[in-house]
Image 1: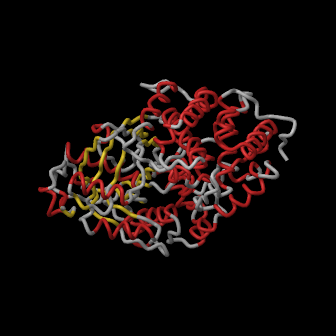
Image 2: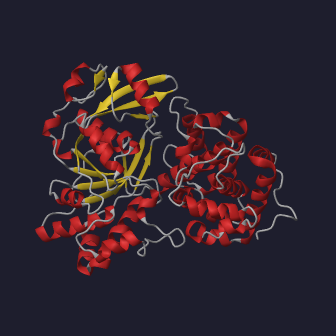
Image 3: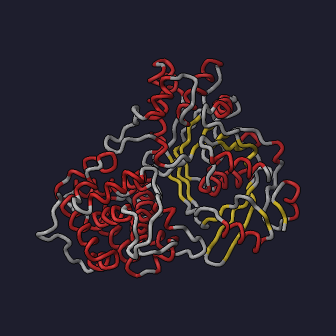
Length: 500
């Protein structure tokens, strides 16, 4: 067994960095060094450094939560190196990523080390994966939530960084004062218009602090939108053990992922960028069609299949797709309620993209956890499925499949599987969701009354009626029977299904 580190790189017998890591400089600061970032953006940067070494674009990790300090400590023990294992069925291919050169000390109380690192003139891009909920978007209005306590604290305490966006504003203010060029803010999160959302957050805090600073940021800082894609499950003992057994490597934080990878990125950078187009990144002036296809079909598909799978006691995504009912349900919902809303992009029609998604989800080696896909529905559903409901209603189509999907999520939040097993808290707002879900078993409309999640969609009479019918049928007959009923084309609506 070989412990991953600089000293053991020549002996590992897999692809390792082919450049001088000691020469790297901190060109990119990334906040949120989770598995997705390490299997996606960092992999592209690693490809670039191996193909054409450019030391100006070294990667520095950062975090704003206490658990990030554990990640920092574990990666420091192995010289910031980690292993990426691509899995296709039983085939595994491993390589070491070395473009990360440091990890900022984590101080959730002040984020002072993070602000200092962002202020460094060598930092020309600040990128982030802070999850959908980290952008403080009010689902009811679609606007940045200035009333959130953390945002209000950032506005009232100039120079602070209670949030990553508050830290950015503080660092940009310091750079402006010093006459230093600003950095590009590059979001890599799965939400519509991620760059626009980051811009709204930064400018919202900046305007609350200083109008002149906000104008300078608006005039000089760019926020490229991006579509990012790679299925990357959580790392656990299974993954570490597999790496050790198959490759003889001891790695505190390996990443397992599918071979497929995609990044479509607006070419809008205010202070230079690495030559990402040379390693497969699609640079374009408009990514929104790509983004809509991916978020509505892949992320929306994940958000649809996970809850019936969880209620039926299924633990892994590929196992859910091996269930004929769930597989057929997912395809029917996407074909009936989503594909007509999605544009064609270069290389894919919506139907071709859907077929690709099913091939990717069928990858038995990835072992993506249903629990992971169910996590944080209160932030994910408003981004991944509810926009399709809204668009369907606008075109005069009441989406029965999406209504059933909402009912399945509601039933999941009651906290019991169909077999009676307890579902552990799996959302930052779990206590509120569970109380609302339990109340909805008697009065289904209570679920859709959550305006912070459903907005105006929850008020639509036809959708409320269909949701109530689906939920009542689900209560009476269970998940399996509900999926069968839907697939048979039978009506959920009855004289007893109301939207009370």
